[in-house]
Each structure stands twice: as structure tokens, then as C-alpha cells.
Image (cartoon, rainbow over all chains, first blue to last red; front, top):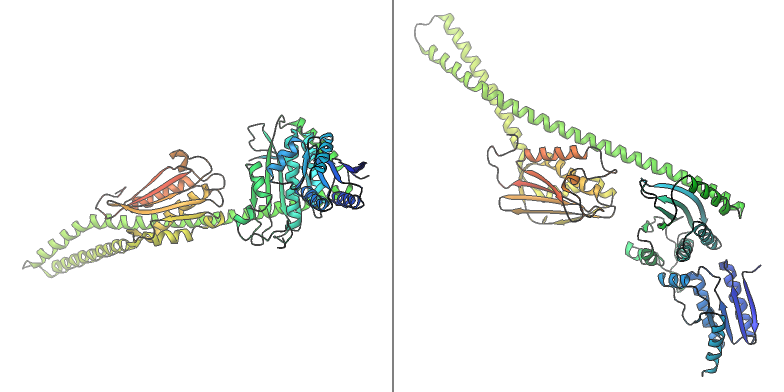
Amino acid sequence: MQPFSVFSLGRILLVSIEEDIDDRDIRTLEDLISTRVAHGRGRGVIIDVQHLEVMDSYLADHLHGLARRLRLQDSRVVIAGLSVPVVMTLLDFGITLEELEFALDVEQALVRLQTLHRSP
Amino acid sequence: MADQLHILTLIIEQQRDIPRVRDKIKLLTRALGCPRLQVTRLATAASEISRLLETGFSGGKVRIALVRPDPEQERLELEMAFSGRSSCTVPAGPDRRARACPLDRKTLLAMPPLPALAGIFPSLQVEGGLLGAPLSIRTRSPLQDLSWGAELLDRIGALRRELFADTEESYLENLRAKHEEVIRLLRDAQERNQLLDRMNSELLQLTNDLEELAQERTIIEMSLRIADRIRNPATVIGGLARQVLRRAGLDESTVSKLRQIVSQADRIDGILHQFHRMAAERHNLFTQISLPTLVREAIQGCPIIRQRRVHPILAGLEQDIRIHANRKILRVAIVHVLRQAATATPRDGRIFITAGEEGQTVFLTVTGQDQASGREARACSGAGGPEGMPGQVTGLTLVRQIMAEHRGSLHVGKAEQGCRYRLEFPRTWHEGKAAGQ
């Protein structure tokens, strides 16, 4: 069983990452999201990481790469639910999540995506 | 000596091993009751270091253990000791994660994630990683609400079973890792034995030097004392015999006996001259020598400086400072002081060696940097610690004796970050000022 799940909310993809995602699953997830967006099924992607306890540079790099690619496909990525320990550790390790949008939870992420798509 | 309780050793060979290391750390730290932030930090650190080893050092292994740094206290720390399998193999390339192999320690310590680790773990230790040496990284993190004892051992036993439970492979890998560890321990023991052998040979050399010094001193003292005692009676006997011989009317037998007395008195005089020659020869061992040259020779002849990679910082040695000294014997004293300072100084640390002249005194100071914030003067006299040579204090007594022979003195005191040894020599010798004379 894959440690992530993907739901469609209209033209928005909601991806929920489980705690024990490994490097191979990260690559699989990245490919899956890219394919779904390429097929016009998402103008925005919410990645819910509230269950994630560790975000290392590998996952951060892949999220950053995904965001860059989706941007070229007129789609935005919003990371929702980063926990305080994860945020503090990201800062400790100097791991940056460029070109990504952030929201406290999925609800706020939805609002954020709608705002982003309304603005020119 | 810190107590250690090995928990788990994991092999890092492939990319898929990295999440496993991370997960084991997460499980372990959670089970040990660490706060969430600490769990996240330690698991992220384990992940980042494992990735560095996997991408740049052909993999390696991590040894996870509980450590009690001070056996007198209950405080516990979680230690993660990572060691790379080979020297650096990082390919230089355009990839964001690819970095060239470091050529110096500064570049090595700037490699991600090392700067971040240094901020998180104050006791971070990074060794090797340069010039073909495999990289090893050791981190320690304090654990709250845990104390060393039977209960902890039971708990760790259960934890081990849980951590091993997922795959049989873990067991095999751990057996292999333990086998490697036994080999490493044997190698360490062999290196320590070699070090002991070296120390023994240094001690033997020191003993020989001491004996030589004592022998020289005994000979000269005996020679001068005997010469002084015999000179006057021999002169009187010879002189009187000559006077009597000059008188007329002595029979042949008396003249013959008087001539024998004169001849024996002359022979005694000859022996006295030999004693004086011996004294002069000994005196010749003391010549005008260059102190900076002698100090440089002593640095070369002090192996512990190289072994501990201690950097000597020299000042004032570019001057031509000359002293009246026995080169061979004084070198023993300077080597001993250097060894004393280098032993108390941490690896890759510095010792400061300064020479100069103050009025009628020539001085040489050697200052070490130990990890304490300065020691009391008395503690400095016994500096060296457990890794030092046995008999350090005896060695300082020898140094004092040698300095007395040179009509100088040794002063031991505390410096800002260690101990300072100051050797003082008179610029010119004055009769009867030497200690013990």
C-alpha cells in the first residue's frame, strides 16, 4: 500500500502524505501528480503533510522540482499542515522550499488556491 | 570513561536504506520519550547524514548507542556514530546535490548538512573525509527523564527486539556490522599497544638520558673533590722531598727513597692533571648554542606533536638567541616540556612556543591549550591526563634538575586555556649561582 492518497476536488488535487514515505514513493508520487496535472485534471495541488514528522532535503528538493514543473503547466502547489517541529528543523538545516505556497491546513490551502487563480 | 550501551547498527548501502535509518531513529527516540522537536531533528539529521554517506562516501554504517558521559551522573545521551565506507567519491557536476570532494577541512565542514549539524549538536565530531580517509560523524543528543540502570537495560532489550523485528535482513546486517566492529576494536587495541610500545621506548630513552646525566655529574664531582683533597698533600710531600734531597751528606739508600717519593708525588700530580682534563672535557659539553635551533630540533624530536596533530605556533624564534648549554641534555628537557604541553592539548589544537630575552635572562615559554578554562598551577605540574605518559611529574623534576645544571629555572603556571612552562636561562654564567652547587 502506497503511503500517500490522491483525491480530486474539482480541478484541485488533494494529496495526503503518510508518515513513512520513502524515497521511491516520493518519486512515484511526483510522477503521478505530474501526469494528472498534464491530463488537465488539476489547476492546483494541495499537498497535506500534517502526518509527516520528517521532511529531509530529498523530499524538499522533489517538492521544489514538482512546483517548478507545475508552474509551467499553469498549476500551483500549496503545502498544508507543516508542523512546528518540521518547520523548525527545516530552518535548522537551511532547507528551503522555494516556489511553494503554504497554508496552515487543507481548508486554508483551498482558499489560497482559489485566490491565486483569481489574481492575474 | 563513558559508559556505552549499543542499541543498533545499521548499514547504509543503497538509497532505500536512508528512510530505514530515519525510521529507526524515529521509533527509538519516540520510545525513549523524546519531545517531538527532538524526534524530528534527530530523524532529519540521521536522514541527511546517511544521504551524505550514500551519495559521497560509498555508503557506510551508523551505530546507535546510549551513552552515559559521566559515570558519576545519571545523565544520558543518544549517540549516532556514522562512518563512511570509503574516501570521498562525490562527483563534481551541475546537479544541485552534487559537490566536489573537499580538499581541506574548511571545505569539508562547509558541506551540507555539516554546518547545520554543528548548530544542532554542540558536541559534533567530524573526522576523516580528506586525503582518502573515510568520513566519520558522531552526534550526541541529551535524553531527559532516563536514568542508567537495570530498568533501562530491560527497556532497551525490548526496544532492540522491536527495532529488529521488521526484517531478518536487519539481524544479518547487524551481525556483519558487529563483526566489523570487533575487527575495528581489535585494530584500535593494536594501535594502543603500538602507542604503549612507543611510550615505553621514549621512557627508556629518558631513563638512559637521566643515567648519562647522573654519570657525567658524578664523574665530574668525584674528580674535582678528589683532586681538591689530594692536591695540597701531594704538593707538600713532593716539595719537602725535593728540599731534603737538595741537602748534602745523605747516604745512597736515603737519596734513592727520596727520589722514589718525589717520583710518586709527580705521578700523583699527573693524576690530578687528568682529573682537571676530565673536568675541562665535561665543561666543553657546555657551549654557546642557538636556542631557536635547539627548539626546532626538539619539535622534530617530539612524536606526540605529530601523533596528536598539534600545531606549534612559534614566536621570537627568528632571532639569534644564544645560551650556554649542553645541547644534548637541554634538548631532553625541551622535548619533555613540549610533550607535556602537547599531551594536554586536544587533537588538532595549538601550542604556543615563544623565546626571547629580558634583561639578563633568556626565556623559552611553551603554552598548551587544554579543554578546561585554565588550570591551577599545581594541576599544571601533573598535566597530561590519562593519555599522557606515565611519570609526567617525575619528568618535570628531571626538567628542573636539567635547568639547575644550566643555572636556570623552570616555572610552571596556568595560562588562559591551559598550562604555561617557562624555562629561564642566565645570559652569562656567574660562579656558584647554580642550584645544588
